[in-house]
Image 1 (cartoon, rainbow, N blue to C red):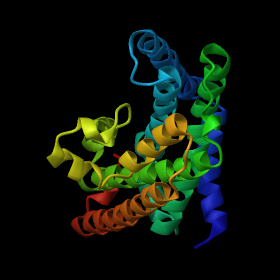
Image 2 (cartoon, rainbow, N blue to C red):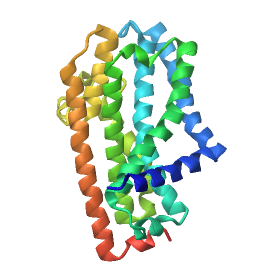
Image 3 (cartoon, one colour):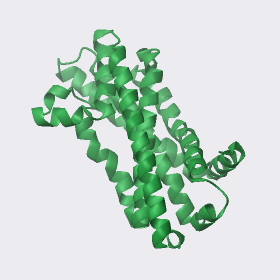
Image 4 (tube, rainbow, N blue to C red):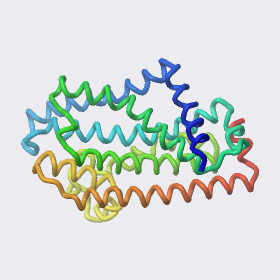
Amino acid sequence: MSWHKIYGLSLRHIYLIRNSFPRILDLIYWPSVQVFLWGFISEFFTINSSYYNNTIGVILTAAILYDFLFRSSISYNMMFLEEIWSRNFSNLFIAPIKISEIIAALTMTAIFRTLIGLVPAVLVAIPLFGVSIFKLGIPLIFLLIALYIFGISLGLLVTAGLLRFGPSFENIAWASLFFLAPLGCIYYPIEILPSALQVVAKGLPLVHIFEEMRNILINQTVNSLEIFKSILISFIYFVFGVIIFYGAYYGAKIKGTLINIGE
């Protein structure tokens, strides 16, 4: 694996973002809107609900963490789609670049896009609603790692679909996380789900991440086992995503459809 090639691929996307004000505005706009929306909804629940002592803190923190997951996955997908839209897709695969280098470059650059949107949203939430995700302490780092790995895993699965089915598969990029959100128990405890769905939900890292987030904020305790489970499950999905991506790539290569995807 050549770090020069990975750096070059990453730099291309960084320049693309840096020199485009509409792209930067889009990255900042949606997370900030999420903070405003869930901040005011949480304030309403604080006044009218007794479930949480700190409703606005719990729900808004969950919204920010979920947006981090959403942005990391979408950022990975969008950079891949940029290659298709700019008709650079065939050049990317004709060049002497390994699949592992493409995955590494997109994975490293996705965090750059994600932070552009996340940091302003986090900073807005502190003075406006008095909510800071940093109250989670050191466990926040590990929760974000688990979310990022899982987000990239979903990105890999979607890009594998793009390789297999072409640009028409891009709608799945937007739908995938919305489909998983109800099972992820982002805004409510897992006990809300029917028993059968609870079994399925525990197979997702999201349940362990957001249950632990609520545990830290409400009970002021840290369950290291839940954090470890979330990272482990996320990593398993990542390995699965890489395997599916390689399978889709070689399948498209054998069928001869790879060269036509960007056309």
